[in-house]
Amino acid sequence: MSLFLLKRLATLVGTLIGASVIVFLVLEILPGNAAQMLMGPDADPSAVAALATKLGLDQPAWTRYWQWIGGLLTGNLGDSYTYGSPVLDLILERLQLTIPLAFMAMAFTTLIALLVGVTAAARHNKLGDVGLMGLAQVGVAIPNFWFAILLILLFSVKLQWFSAGGFDGWGEGIGAGIKSLLLPALSLAVVQAAILARITRSAVLEVMREDFVRTARAKGVGQRAVLWRHVLRNALIPVVTVMGMQFSELLAGTIVVENVFYLPGLGRLIFQAISNRDLVVVRNCVMLLAAFVVIVNFVVDVLYAVIDPRIKASDV
Image 1 (cartoon, rainbow, N blue to C red):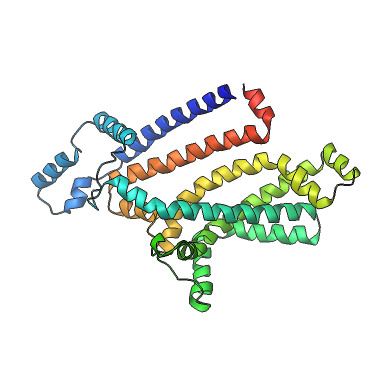
Image 2 (cartoon, rainbow, N blue to C red):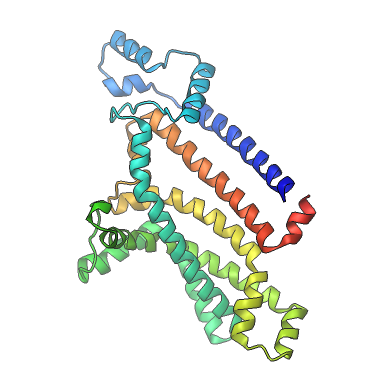
């Protein structure tokens, strides 16, 4: 097991290094001048040059890259051009909303997808299966921002059960915070749940054809017990794979949904930083999202070994 984890950790570190290089280079080749953007198009060239020197933009690219990496390792991410505040403080403040939102969306996704996928597989080629997969196909086709608008129109404008947007913070209480994030989480979850439900159905149907399932039924094990205790566990490998990718997509998807619901999360911070060409914030936020993706994939690899020990053995 230790060799398995060491290999995965080495892959994680190498991927993070490669991602940092790509993020830095992509932002370096973007046209425009951050100092010029901050001072405006009519600013005096000498003043723009002085600001660029103050921001360190006149230094060689490799020097700025190593300074950035050093800051990442020490927690010194620099100051935002736009906000004038430490980038680390901005990110930590926004993560207090984005992380709970992503976990809520993932919880909704998993719950809906497993229920729909297993139920559809249990009613294979029957009316329930066709109906559920038809709904899942509709869910795949719906953009999450459009579904978010529909939720606002129904639950905020017509029924007035929820606020149409905004977030007062966790200081108002956990219940109030969860209520504010409920509609955004549902709008993020609907598309992902539809995709995961179809994959769950396919995986469950494939396992249901195995000999051990017929043996369990022959021994008198009930249909529900066979599905949820035996079939689902053996069908989890492809499901967990997609769940890992979807959690990363949920973090990135908050950029759109947080703007629809006017939530002060990491997604909205990235959108505002891009609009203001605040490259310090953009670079660190994109690197953070890339790190989330890599770490989630590492966790998925470890879960593979927990779910199916044969994977760990073959890797070693």
